[in-house]
Image 1: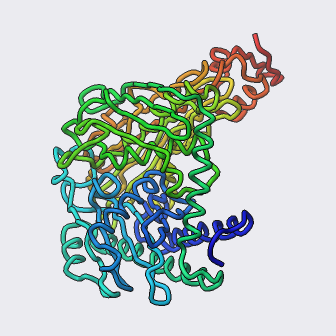
Image 2 (image 1 turned 120 degrees about the vertical axis):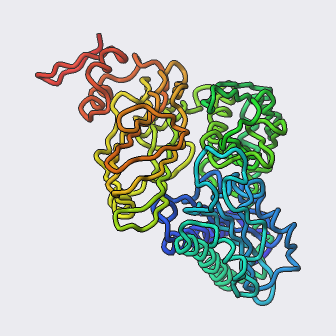
Image 3 (image 1 turned 180 degrees about the horizontal axis):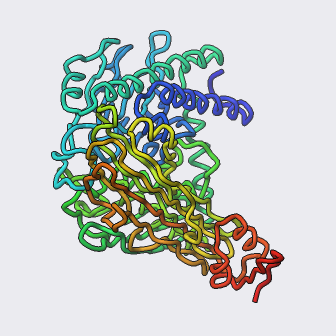
Length: 554
């Protein structure tokens, strides 16, 4: 079955290759040691054809990694051309500028050989629990403080581990057993992917994947270009301020639509800062791709075709095109704002079709020892509310534009000896609107380890709230509290035994005039505890009789 495929054949084969990527994800989650991979899903798995073209990704993948993965593959193939690879080879790197934007993510690639021929590549990306240096935080002054740099190298040669490289990595980290376990989980899942690709090719009678890959990529590219042609041609601009470390940082973009293509220019964005929140260009590019795809062809599986109509540029040295050796450990805190920046620009081209700002996510990196004296280095994710869209309320505690999952409390408490005192939805934190923004979370924890813990915070939305659209109100601000006192959500602190840390997550912006929200929806929100009676009266003009439960608009 080679050559051109009819729509039915293409759909069946396309679903099969996506299912292989999903199986790789399943294997990765099942074999990973760290909670940030097996519980929170800080990962991505992708398939590429023999030319290094992105063919499929696991549906359960982080948007940033699916955007950085294809350039990483090209960097790897330039360093090790296909003719230099053999069965059993595995490549690895955590280079921030060739990978995902910071040192904590490893990219692991395996060539797939079938019946003696190179037919594909698999690539997995995961966040490691540690990479040495001063630890995972935003406080570094250059990338050298942030940890060990692994250039593109062979982790395995012909099926044998490169022991010298592994010893260098494990000799530089605080949790060598966990780091080794996560690295080998990446090796294992890619091996599973190679086996499944071979079985798929045998079952379908495919000598190679090139023809199938070309048709999948072309179909996706054509769909993307058709969706872009629906938008009026022209240049649309947006700019806003983001919380930096010593004040606001200005973001700016000009989005130019020209038929079936779109180009972004980030001229006007402020320069890099002397803290680890700078964003390499690869990460900026990933969220450009994400934002455009979300507005055009969100239902189509992702591959190279979705990115072909998109071009972008950013001045070297600006915060969204940080150059080596700028510190980038917390690049996601600032890089996630690329998506709402683009949404705001394109809302002018397609009014009513763009969501309000989301509250995004926050992270706490907890390092030290648990109650049993074992070393820990674990990430805790908390979620703001999702922005509303005309016709759809924003989801509560849903961390757009990423899709990280909060670690289950039982797992978190067991591994870290932290005690979660409460975890609840913050009523009224979602922006009011005809369609309500999602509410954020409130989570308070106590250090029950008996030891001091280092706590590094990664968050924004503490000064500039998520904005609404089309008359919708802003969402609530984020706040971090250490022992009930406000702290910098990009800072690093010591949490003494018995001390507490609390996060109040930002809510998503609302969409449309709040006075246009149906009274019965406001009443349902009040009954569910998502909106208070006072906010119903103030924001929506809805009175509720507590005795009868009857609601009406004033």
